[in-house]
Structure formats: structure tokens, C-alpha cells
Length: 228
Length: 248
Ligand code: HEM
Ligand code: SF4
Ligand code: FES
Image 1 (cartoon, protein in one colour):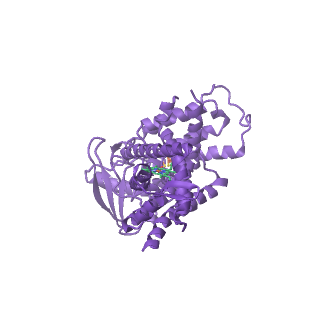
Image 2: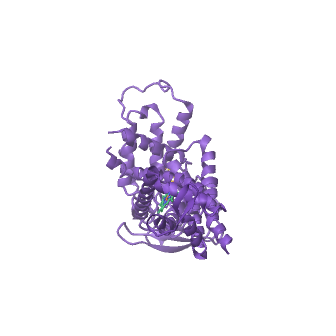
Image 3: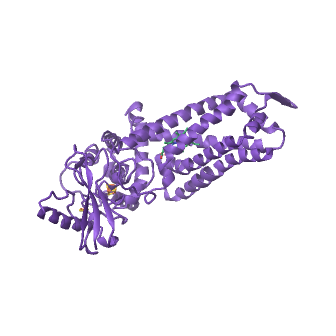
């Protein structure tokens, strides 16, 4: 079977959604680890130095562009599959089983994913665009001179309540998406084994479903509270 | 018991169907679900009306014919039970029961509650067999097989092709069925020579029939009357991954 044929099968497409999903899971861990420095009371030194490093390192810039391609690939293939799945049942049932045979969040992947996509568009235009193409002030810290003051942009953004609310909603969507998504991607890659299911479930629910989204959501909330 | 049945009536695959409401009285708790339909059909025939078409054959839970989607559940509310094995003690006097056919593009309605499930046959024809030279029967224990593999293959082979997995899945995906049929052969040495082509061809046919893809919600496993496990879907995914990466 040729590559083109393989990735045209339903399982081939699912593998692409799963692989890009795993990459995004790895990304959110790194992203949170970096962003937590926003909460340090150091006038932005740790965060701005980190942001400057990320913005100038060639390899990281390559990954950052790759990340955008991967998000688009993930979303496009997932939407193609969702549309095919809708077409597979042209006449709907009059009575639906509700949550008796499957969990609510496992059926809302496309909805949560779409909310995430909207969130990402707003998020990127707010900070990433500002950092790269916007006109933001610079600061210097000892040896590190003239770095963009993204810290200030973030604090200004999170002084607005509606933006904070938007971020919290985005993270609720992320939580539901990943509680099912991580486990689902494991299953798509054939990882379903009595001995490992316990730990995979744990990672899916507690790391990706709770710790990461709560960690992200805490940042705008704390920054908002600090400024009122 | 007195029951209200709302049953999907549809003349043929072209016509648009509709629900028809019937009152049935004197339903005993000991009757099977299909027996209620037998009684109702006798009445309809006596009244000179068209009886409700529904599939059934063995009435003992092994043929997989009795497809009915009952109050939002494939084969009704009981776990690991076909419609013919569902008994009226599951219901109470005065209940309203809505009965629909399996709904999937790949399972067109033939009439009323009967659907055309030959799409499953074509998936089997695409690779759900082993090619053997016929001749004398080989001694049963000539090829050593790990007991765990034999048991897992046997559990997968319990699939009766009823289509409840497709009916229950929000995507009308046939992954549980296809994975059971691939697994029963992939786990045994006799299935190995055709292993890669089998997985790829059966999945290609499954897609061609218009079944949806799997989003791992687990509704199929919850509704399967034979307890076919999601581990079979994981195995099918592995088979397809390996075959797709390595076949030319
Ligand atoms: C950009 C917006 C996004 C959209 C539209 C989207 C949509 C989807 C959809 C429809 C699915 C398949 C549903 C299923 O298998 O049940 C899916 C799966 C998944 N998504 Fe997303 N998603 C998005 C963003 C993300 C992000 C940011 C992450 C990670 C941080 C992520 C991780 C995953 C994972 C791990 C899976 C499971 C893949 C599998 O089942 O094989 N997604 N996504
Ligand atoms: S896997 Fe279960 S639900 Fe699906 S066809 Fe086989 S027996 Fe029926
Ligand atoms: S009639 Fe054979 S399984 Fe129900």
C-alpha cells in the first residue's frame, strides 16, 4: 500500500490525528513550564529572558513554525474525519442513549477542539504576533540587554476581565479534549494493555486533564488578581 | 402489562419512513421482546394490515439477526443481550417503547426494522479468511499455540456480526466488528501468512462501505451482545500500522 493510500484510510488519518495530538501534548507541558515564570515577582526578568531565548534560538524557531503546521494538520484532518462520521449516519435516531454507553466529553472532541482553535487564534494574535511583529517595549537585565518586554504585554492583557474569562474557558475545553484525547491517541496507536492502562489513564486524566489546564488557567487569574 | 410501542415503519429503502404507535395489552413479563412483536403482528394480519418486518432467526442469541434499536439502546437496556434474549420483565406496565432500525448509511433499511447488513459480508470477503489446501483434517494439536492467544482468538471469534456496534457508535463505525474478525485470525499461526494484506484490505473495504471512523468512545463495547473488547480495536490499529509502514 502506497503512503497516499495508507493515509487515506480511516485508520491512517486517525494515526495522523493521534501523532499530531501527541506532539501537541508534549508541547503543552513545555509551554506551561516556561510560562509559569510569569508569576515570579521579578519584574519579568525570568520570563522575558526565557521568551527572548525562545525567540532567537534557530532550532526552537523551527519547532515553533512546525507547531503551527501541526495544529493546522491536526484540526483539518480531525474535521475531515468528523464530517465523514456525520455522513455515515444520514438519518439520526429519535431516542439517543445519552451518557449510558459513552462519556459526554468523548463525544464532544470536535466541539472542544473547535473552541480550542478559536482560543488559539485569539491567543496567538494577542501575544505571539505582538512579540514578533508588534511594537513592544524593550528592557535590559544585566548581561541580557534590549529584550522585548512581553511580560508587560501579558500583564496588560490579563488586566482585562473578559480576556481572563476567555482563557479559563479555553482551558476547560483543553481539559475535556485531553482527558479523552490522550487515552484515545494511545488506543489509536494500539497501546491498550492491562499492565499499562492504569498509568496511561492516570496521565490522561491527572496530568493532561487536570494539572496542565489548571496550571495554565491559574496564570491569567493570578495576574488579574494581582492588579486589582 | 399494557405497553405503548412506537415503531419505525418504512415501505422500502426509497420511501421516507415514520413512527406508528401501537397499544399492546396482556403482555406477560415472561415474554421475550420478539414475542411481543409476534403477537402484535398477528393482530395486524387479522386486521388486514401490513405486519411489521423485523429480522430474527435463532431466537437464542447466536445468529445476530434480531437488530432493533430500543429506547436509544442497541438490543435494548440489558448488557450483553440480543433482542431475542431481552425479556419483558425489563419493562413496567404503562411504559412507552420506541423501536428503530439500525441507522447507518452502510446499513440501508430494507423494510421497517430490517436493514441490509451485506456490507459486513463484503468486509469478510475482503480478507476475513485463511487460504488453505484442503485435504485430510490436520491433527488439532499439530501446531503449538499459546493458551492466552488461543483464548483471545476465541473471544474475538464470538462476534456474531449483529451490527450493534455500528448501531451504537455515534460515527456508525464498524471498527469493533472488523477488529474482531481481523483479531481471530491475526492471533493464530494459520492467519499469519496473509496477515498484512488482510488488515489493509478489510479496513479499505470498511471505509468503502461508508462506515465512519473510530473516536474511541467505547459505545460499541458497551452494547456488544458478545462482550467483544476494545483491545481488539487496539490490535487492529497495530496490525494496520505495521502493515501500512512495511508493505510496498
Ligand atoms: C486546534 C484546534 C483543535 C481541534 C479542532 C481539534 C480537534 C480534534 C478532534 C476532532 C479529534 C478527534 C476526536 C476523537 O478522536 O475522538 C482530536 C483528537 C485529539 N486531539 Fe485535538 N483538536 C485541536 C487541538 C488540540 C490540542 C491543542 C491538543 C493538545 C494539546 C490536541 C490533542 C489531541 C489528542 C491527543 C487527540 C486524540 C487523537 C486520537 O484519538 O488518536 N488537540 N482533536
Ligand atoms: S462486535 Fe459485537 S456488536 Fe459488533 S457485530 Fe460483533 S457481536 Fe455484534
Ligand atoms: S434472533 Fe438470533 S441472535 Fe436474536
